[in-house]
Image (cartoon, rainbow, N blue to C red; front, side):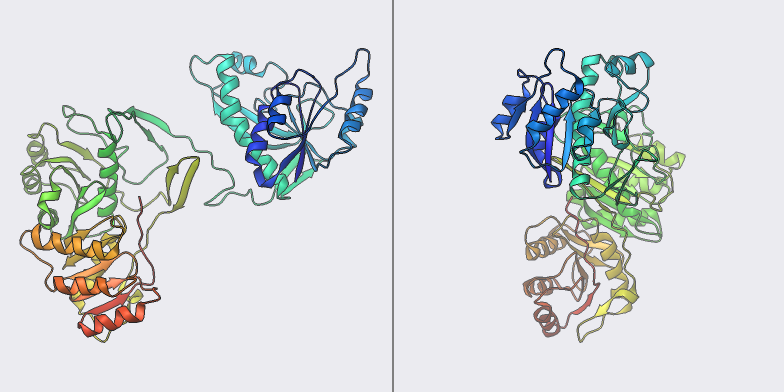
Length: 526
């Protein structure tokens, strides 16, 4: 789509459109009514043709617009985009050109005219923004295409609002509107004065996302001491979460960026299980996880997977913490413990450690937040939260040897755990406790080797002999099965789906290892 831009000054929105080419739209010409307008040089630097049509003394508005039309006659364009074009247009030009858009630096219809930023501050509102609208012969009254909210902050000046509305509002809204027109998704109802956009209808992944989170505290620092950081809260979250969790021992140092990140990972893991469960997390990866008849047994089994790596880790429980569990927790250094409640005796024990942060969460472990997101430079990735739960009925036995009931139970435990291990991920498990974890490797066989090494050298009172192995994605080659066999693994759960599945299955049969496919993988890359 070709766009004719019209500006009277710097034309920063037009240059933003030229640089971003939303929907493939390109500026075919930039016209100004001021020969000294800075937009001319900016356009010429980008190779965009320019035209100057100044208003002559005593010239009528219609006569000037006729000369504008004459200046544009040699250019192809499907849309006109105004950017601070300081002329009110009449039917002379509007009837002879395609749809014309304008961006207004406030939210219409509340704030119209030239001095909108002053008006916003005088009104004492806490939200301003911008409006992209279709231009008609009225002033600031044409059908609205899209808007973008921008907060008004304490102590803001007119210049503050002007810059923030431009960069946080107009630079988002104008390209969005242009893209919609370029994709032929806009329908204007002139009688009703409304605009409809095909596909702009909400759902889990709406066309536009407007999120508002509240800062609840500034943190001591980010991942590293040279990085500043803050914690923001989503006030609508009903699920147990670390943001809302009060720290019960006020005398201990506050939670840091890494503490929150790791504790969130730990809490999300124990939410997977209905029976008493514990996870010990280090750098968002499980050092150990276990399900048992009591929460103290679950902690002991989880810790025994890798007590060395658990040093300085995070403990999450899905049951009230009792004194027996608390006594075990303080035997070695931990950063944080999070649980849905504590007995008085447990708190007395935990408070003996000055800098062990004790967080209390609700027992609402059923998920209420369906999405997860990750900010990246220039935007953010949003996806469904991985809430898959594989059952025995979902498993396909692909080997000659079938897993036993005990192995199936262990496989399902390992699969729910591996969802929370950074890929490439391998989990060795026996019963409902981890034996070895291989996390975050660029090679799957390396992840197996690490899980094998951890089980052999760091696990206490257990090993990988006759254990099961879970893999978060398929094995591309049989070498991972060979490494597992060397560790004593007797059953494997994995997604399947490799072009070499037959070779992997054949090798499992040769080694008398039972193998099941889930049909779905469990990557975790964050």
